[in-house]
Length: 41
Image (cartoon, rainbow, N blue to C red; front, side, top):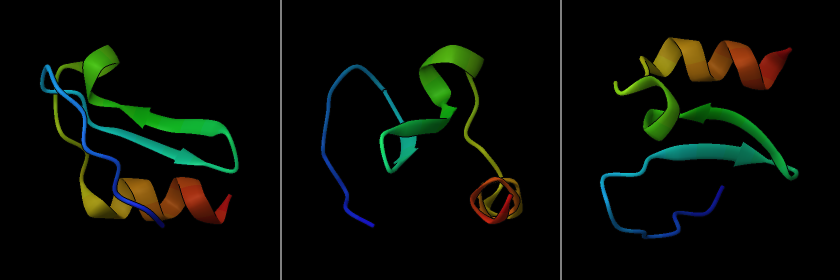
């Protein structure tokens, strides 16, 4: 996993080119468990 700094309050989780989560889309930070579940599926 690599942290890539960006601006504008963006927080996105991208794995192998697939966006698993975007704070920009939802407006809220994810729970750790939610990201782990998405990575495992």
